[in-house]
Image (cartoon, rainbow, N blue to C red; front, top):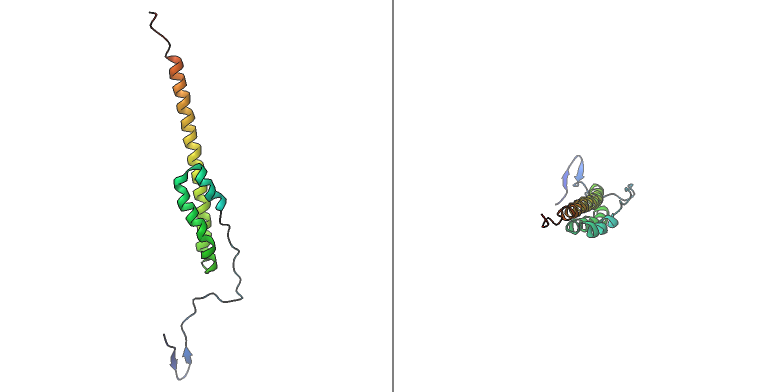
Length: 114
């Protein structure tokens, strides 16, 4: 795109989309790779999304998309915590199932003597 000019105002250029140098950049958010690794242990189907979001934090921040980098960081942490809660709930259900099965086997005594 070529600059347009006016005899009175001079040439006008399109607005720059690149960040200006010297402007204060927010700090790089945590990638939360630990939470992404925890998803493998606790509930592996969420690990794909967690690692994807974790890997996108730095590239988004480096290109100037600070809110996108923060969102990717938060999403990784949320997926890790979700995997942890799913793990806790499934293990509680498994323990309850074992207790129920033990109670049923213990209560089903030998009634053949009647």
